[in-house]
Amino acid sequence: MRKKAKSILIQSLKVAFSLGLIFWLVQSGKLNFKALLSLLQPQYLALALGFIGTSIYLTSERWRFLLLTQSHKLSSTQTFKLTLIGIFFNFAVPGGVGGDLVKAFYFSKDHPESRMVAATSVLMDRVLGLYSMILMAMLAMIFDWRHVQNISTLRILWQVVLTLCFLFTVALSLIFSQKIYDRGTFKRLLERIPFSGKTIRIYESLHLYGRSLRYVISSILISMLAQTFSILFLVLAGTVSGLGDIPWSTYFLVAPLGFMATAIPISPAGVGVGQAAFYFLFNLYSGNTTDLGPTTITAFQVGTFVFGMVGAFFYMQRKEKVPQSIEET
Image (tube, rainbow, N blue to C red; front, side, top):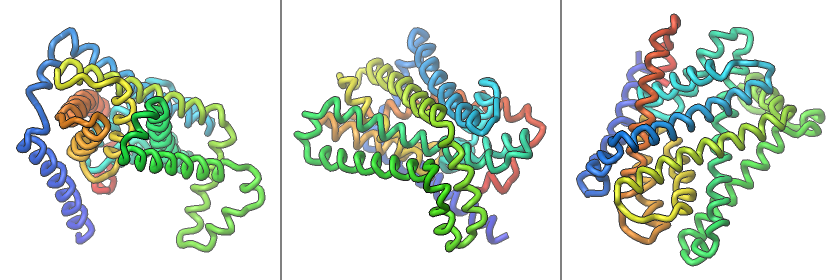
């Protein structure tokens, strides 16, 4: 009973935090809802939803490719439906991990013999998604190197991005390394920590992805392509809103970093956090004060919510419903 009450309290605080950020942005004039209405014009609406839908589909393909490394050949339709259900739960459950848990739950229900694969596939999917965001941001900063070097805050941001890229690359290399696995180096270290048995099984499962590097590399490339379509949506929203003439290079730098912020599980689907992050990053990179950032990410979240409602339809068609323990996570 205490655990349930604590969970409700934490979720309530997350929702309150998200709503508080949105309220502050609206009251201070940093979020322009009127500018969003321009996207509702038929000639823009279809293209905007097409960009988001393609991005979501490619994201589901990234997960499907990772499952192929574990000898699970799911169809594109199957992974796309589960991804849409996950998106619905990202909005329905405060925090960004709700959708991942739901995807893992339904995959394990459909493949009861592969529960560990269900857990590690969504974990690796999330890790590679973040890794590709870091790569996209790094490439964008290299492309606009002179501008980055002229602003001290951007130089610091470059060092942070470069460090994250290095740490992710080293961590994945160590996990995938066959020599380290054969020597049992990691296993001996993991045996000394609590819950070593489960942790070792997770490590062994994650290591298997490295034996099919072509699928892993394909997943990263697919993820970067998915982000490109998301960024194209932001460019469209920013152009149609008329809130400022921002170069495309700015979008390609700001978006990956902003999306990383929305991945932090402190609000439903990153709502509120994303608006604050995009506001700061757009203003920092452009050198101007504009409400373009929070307005475009709000449009993106609304479009994603539309696809989440499609996921809700697929969820209602499932015989098994998500356990309350997952919803409270």
